[in-house]
Length: 370
Image 1 (tube, rainbow, N blue to C red):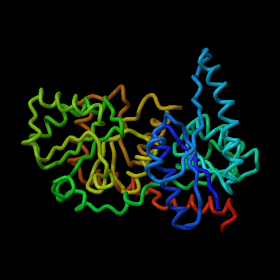
Image 2 (tube, rainbow, N blue to C red):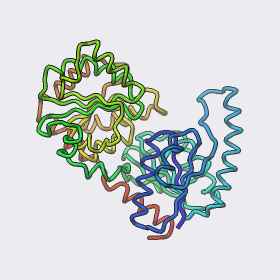
Image 3 (cartoon, rainbow, N blue to C red):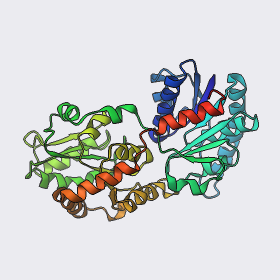
Image 4 (tube, helix red, strand yellow):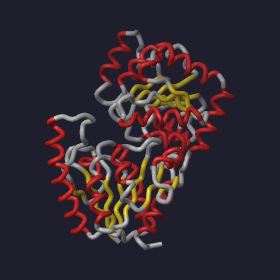
């Protein structure tokens, strides 16, 4: 069985794709995969390291208003569609999967026109333009949220949840605390703005951490992003916080083992990307969400509102985020155990830890292997 998987641009498209691939391999070890991405996206670095065959299509998204650059991109898109068609013809896939990003467009369109079964996995509450267009052509749609179903043809879409890495569920609190030198009996707050960091969150956390230094009963693990790390450390030092003495506060540029960090977290301060939220809810971690304001279709705010409405999170808009506001919400939640417990239960009720297995079964059914 041959399967093409396409997803690119950000980790939020790539890691769900990898999870789906690994889950299919467990169910059908003889499956052969080809991952299609772009040369510029993160997938060009990540996928070869995963040991997966990798092919590229040169395509970029269009700007939202008419510009001369859009004509150049349109030309590249036409070439990209032709190359995508050749990739599909040469690999002879039994099914093609798309997990998001512009590169999915030509690959899934070409496969659909060749009558190859196709599936898109939509992570967000509000789909992007690529998946809205592809929905007319593909065979099935795996929706990451119940709210997303209304944007797709009813006969094609199934609510599966978003696939998450197995280690997110298998990591244990004591294991995570030992990894970071924390006390598993104390409450722990995990702060992360994603792999690249979030400047607004990092800046708001400066005064929060300075105040937290006086209260060692709560531990903080702040992941700044590599480009933001030096600036955050300098600002903390200028504010008088000695991180060597405040053992209950750690500031890291990047985490290679986020599952262990999540395992010990009682509360998270996060952006509202779909993959991160899927992992938080699978573990039942309450969250304070600060949506990235420039996400396509403003999908992060929609993602955050869904969790807030369910009682699993609090949302602070990026332009409303201040140290005072963030500190107030943290203080409230950390001091009211009943409230934190209720949020954790609401978060866990939204989690779909079996999502990857359900999507893998859909793929195998499309390929005629079930």
